[in-house]
Picture (cartoon, rainbow, N blue to C red):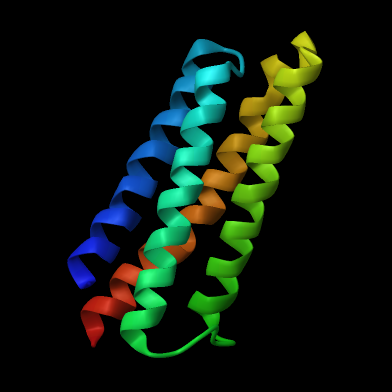
Amino acid sequence: MLIYAVISITLALVFYTIGVWSEKGQGELKKWHLVIFWIGLVFDTLGTTLMSKIAGKGFELNFHGITGLLAIVLMLFHALWAAMVIFKNNEKAKANFHKFSIFVWLIWLIPFISGAIFGMAK
């Protein structure tokens, strides 16, 4: 199960990074970015669920647990907001959305990196 968890979390990193930085590079939010954000969220949720099962614990009130929960909530909010921006077709919002995307991506990196560090330390 560990290999599936690691692959899922790594795919979350790949998809989310591609979505965020291609959106920034292209200068506006597009439908395919939205799809990539959702795929990243699915892989992150799957990987997090598998890691929790491996650890045999639920949510823990520690640095990694709090930042991980914050990251998933932000990713969900990010994907929902992106869907609203795409649906409303607001050009200004589509052009400025990358600022929020980069913020969410940076917050997401905190539990990704801390999970790798804490996981290797065990």
